[in-house]
Length: 211
Image (tube, rainbow, N blue to C red; front, side):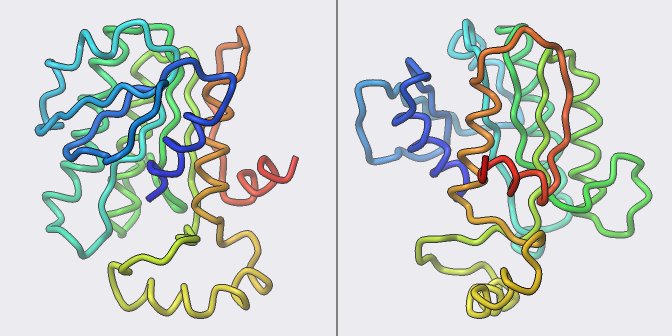
């Protein structure tokens, strides 16, 4: 969901010359800026080494909902796939910036009782050690889908139904998917020579999209 918005925003962004999309299925869209790469096994990204060369930034939105897959698969998707992609990207484009879609409550210490928080934290910790000159970690709370979709579970169906009230009562516990995607792209492609690693909580993301 967020990756789709990030793709569309990057294609429309005049600061972005080309966009390389990597996924398992065809997007069904065409654009003069777009290069689409199909890749089936994110446990091994070695075949992407040439594709990922000379890249200036990556916006990584791969993930799965808790309960939609087993805990073992959730960890593979959240941790192993992220680390493997980051390894190949950094080897191929060591100067690239990395923008990661993490999640609120991510715990790099590994002490959380929530598997999602531990796995997201583990991925964050690995990326911090990967050597990217610019690393941006986004920890959104509830991501509002904006466009209609089939919700993954009853909790998300309820949150979508009460979102107008929820965002008024708890403004720092929600972010529209398109705003989140825009922030992830903007920070990754902005011109800067600084070396930095920053974490953006939901409140920070809201501030970014308002500015």
